[in-house]
Length: 320
Image (cartoon, rainbow, N blue to C red; front, side):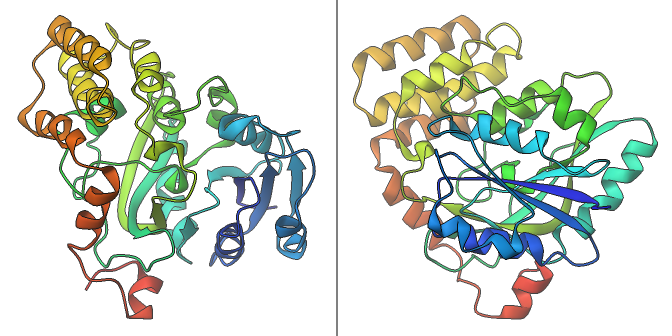
């Protein structure tokens, strides 16, 4: 019986091949690979990988990532855990073997666990940076929104819980469905809601277990769409701590409004901050960085470290 069902949503991008191969290459763990095509039919790029995929299902097209992940969970193997992998990312060979002991220990203690990890980051089409990120892991018992949004670090080392690092139990994966109405912040939303389920617990292991791709072509996270972010954030106004809410607004929605040069958006975000709490200095700086093109910021951040040129570093997930 597989230990882990791997859910990979895709629109058939060429990068899917690397993701599938990295899931199939997991050491010491049996996997059940489920590829969910957000298309009406299976594209050639997926059909060519049939020998390495256990199940291929289609959404019918245009249903987005959350619907695809929910459908993938429905096709998980019986009695297996569930892990999520984006089609532009890849896993290191020991990813699941490193996370499963933490997951099973917490499950034995009666928790509904979500286990994340550090990653190695790369620009689309490039090699990974050598240093594992984030710099700071989520503290025991911390709410994900406080960890992710309060006093955010600048640069690639900022707090993160990427989708492609997430491993959980089938029980939690079925209890906490991904919100299919959201075009953006799907992963953050899932984590925020998962943390509010009784006995749920989110942890991160220190090892880097995945290669996370920044700036993939067509990524919605690269757009300066402050309205979509605001639509999501205001669901949580009055639920999150005021300091957390204002820090999110400053670093995300206000920054996007500044980037889009949208005066209406800037005024509305400033009003939202005034209703809650002054943002931290770090997040205020992030808001001001909306004046700088995102692509330029990514280039500067990614150049701060040398790329990995030693294959052994990738195999171990270590840094040099």
